Length: 265
Image 1 (cartoon, rainbow, N blue to C red):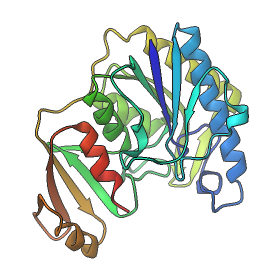
Image 2 (image 1 turned 45 degrees about the vertical axis):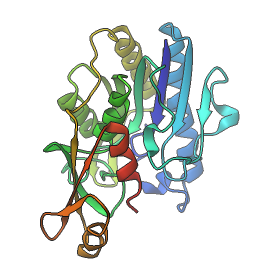
Image 3 (image 1 turned 90 degrees about the vertical axis):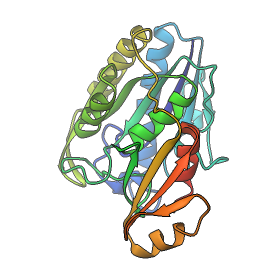
């Protein structure tokens, strides 16, 4: 079985704020090292569970965060952006399972560490009426190819969000928000043991896990933060502005949802 790993940085163990999670800030290199170590825990657990191949999609910021020279050499790495589909770009139907590493809660989550959805330009996203963040958008993209999300790591609010959407997902909460950029965190070594355990458990339940998908066509409702963005996006083909901040699109599948949202900046 091939395993697809997509990794963000806000949910990585040991990262409490954007001081370590942004390339514009002073602790970013530490964040890169922590991210690489968490992902290595995922890779090792996947191979221990019988995976034939692992492909890792760097899905944070520039998509060039993981330290290639320190990444487990058994895994392939997808680095940099080539598609607006973003966080699961590179996935296809040859994979048997997806692991979300270092993900965070959707925008507006009261106890979500560094919570947001895609970009600050977006306040909320709904697909067929269901409120989703990056966890749900990634799962919807993977679901287009019939590939289920089986495990996830991140802060407690993100793990709760994943379980609410996909009860079969095994989760590893490695930190708990005390504020939007403050957290109580497990020691990294302990966190990585917990991550590996969740991956092993998730891959053992592959047959029970379901692809996360919606009936087509998919109604994508984007609530923008600023009126000017809603006015601009209203001009696109197939766009319907339903109130001052919300623009609705109809798309054929989960991959096109990811493409549409990836174009918002």
